[in-house]
Image 1 (cartoon, rainbow, N blue to C red):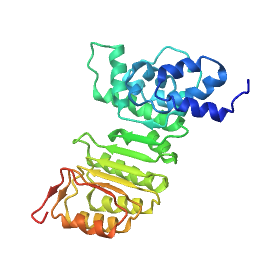
Image 2 (image 1 turned 180 degrees about the horizontal axis):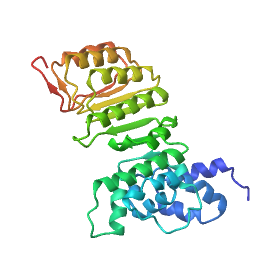
Image 3 (image 1 turned 60 degrees about the vertical axis):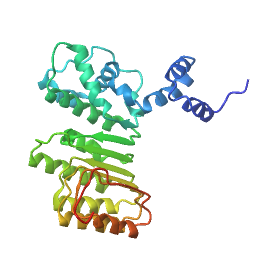
Image 4 (image 1 turned 135 degrees about the vertical axis):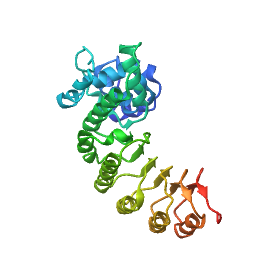
Length: 293
């Protein structure tokens, strides 16, 4: 029997990437198949991030510095051996499901205790820091206000493989200093990353100065195709003028979403549409239009 090239095996198993039972069975056949299949199984955790068992594996992968940041919160670490594989190096996306995974893990330890948000955020910060550090081919990243963390920033700046970022502030009480630090960190990341094709910002108050810096960074990006600004309180004349100017010039964009913002006049959106012929999808959603809209 003629042995197949490794590339052929990879193609076959990749077509089974969502048939987890079949892949698990194949991984037990021999070491070669196992080495091919494990990266496929771990590339897209998605809803499996919610599983407390996966959280235990992730916690075992934290380094000393990442563990130390959790000491003050009395976090209980799993009493298990380190994983045989570097599983997290294969992960290509970090989704919001990680939030539920942390919650479910804590509930599995103390089901009768209602955990405080600060404890959940501490674990999530350490896990995201670790995933940014260890993942070799990270493509998609979901972040919220916990991004204001030195270790997260340091690892994020080095990640040049990321092509899609979703950043959401779910906390209306986040103070001005923290907010400014997060925006500055985001802009620094955008200035260093030339592979980003999609950016979604939600519930972020930019203001005229930060809006100018953000759009300047995005304009320099040669491959950005999709931009979403959701419920970001874009309402002043100056902010919309900056956005219109950007849209007129940014010919790589094919998709634009501006849901939940304040438009005094629809003409400010229509104008760049005619000048930017590459835009094929525009979503105004629940954007408030003025009397001219």
